[in-house]
Length: 82
Image (cartoon, rainbow, N blue to C red; front, side, top):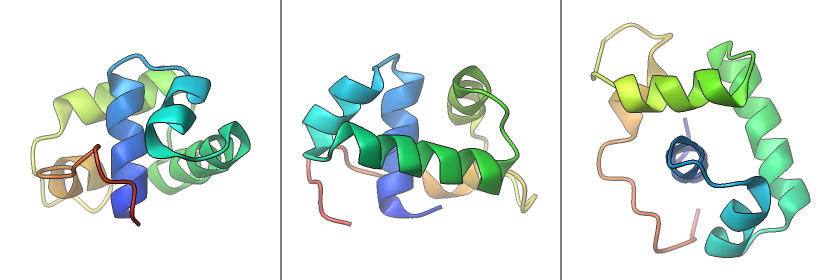
């Protein structure tokens, strides 16, 4: 998972809508939708809720399917650079 994907996943888990995520990260709403679609495919998520639950459960597992637990630690939301 890229840094930007981690930022978006974290904001999704906080309950933000795509429009709010776009504003916070200085992206277009369409770009957020593209990121989410790619993240769903990468992680095998079927919904926004499933993505949010995986972020909240992130445990640092060595399972390659549990990318969120490994890569979200320390991801900053404030700076939008990717």
